[in-house]
Length: 364
Ligand SMILES: Cc1cc2nc3c(=O)[nH]c(=O)nc-3n(C[C@H](O)[C@H](O)[C@H](O)COP(=O)(O)O)c2cc1C
Image 1 (tube, protein in one colour):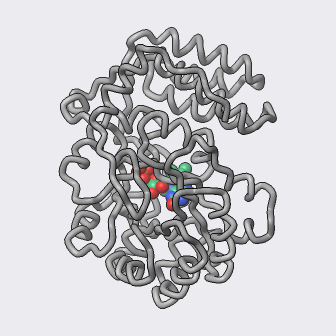
Image 2 (image 1 turned 90 degrees about the vertical axis):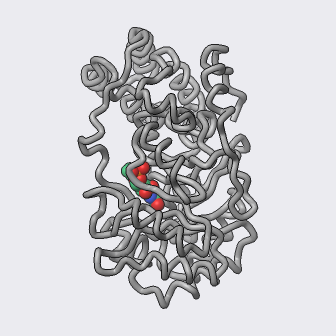
Image 3 (image 1 turned 60 degrees about the vertical axis):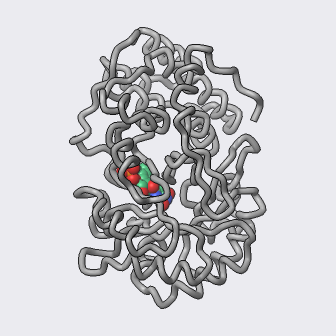
């Protein structure tokens, strides 16, 4: 990635104010710059978005889930997804699949792209993945886990982690058992989304369950689920016994969440110091990352506009801006609309109703 235009001194000063509160942490041999990490999201956590989130304080990132079979077949689109930029500091690649042999072969290929760690998706609830035995289906037959973990572990040098759910359903909350097997099979840490597979994205993430795992834990644990706003994240960060926290959807409507959550007193005021102009600067940087990664204009447009519209969520007239953006088919015009919109916001605050469902499907 070419060096991007530096942020303005005003925005940099705001970023640095929060960065000073960062607590780096080490998992395996990876030095994460913060305890707040970006969670994997299919269709979102590609190279440009991951880079931007690291610029904005994410201590590390994980790719979207990538099919081990796609890698083994040499599928061009899948191989593109493995690409990592030298500017990315702490990125992991997440693989999904069900067959130990295939996963191990794909892991070797994935490692050659230079991630800091590999992660196995064990939380995806989507039928297409689960029906083949991948994603959260891996949590059902735990006798198959040690051979799978050991096979993959044996093929790579970098740390191997897993991302699980609390269990398949309320009657099989087997996360603790899985973590034990993982430890014995050379897995270095575990991320857990505090819902069962059957819950998918309904109800609330069970943080009591996650925190209780810390009492018996045999591996470093990353807690995840419903950390949607800086206030909630900073509260959790202060009291959690997890080694780190992962944020997924919260980073879509607030790209500054990794920074803003670091200061409890600030977060408790529930007001943001980041204004429309700051968002515009961030979007310009995203534009440079996206257009360099996807030279084809249409792909850049599709990638950019969904993020731009999420970033606008909660600001005045966001709905009207959203329809303007989706009605525009030219990248340059979309950017002009975006500049006009964000620059017109002045010091307006965002108002988001966090009780409303936002993105209730995903792959983990
Ligand atoms: C659009 C979307 C895509 C997702 N894709 C993945 C994925 O590829 N791999 C994975 O392990 N989890 C995936 N997830 C799950 C998230 O990583 C996370 O566990 C879940 O959204 C709960 O965290 P949150 O409340 O912070 O969003 C996805 C979630 C969403 C919303």
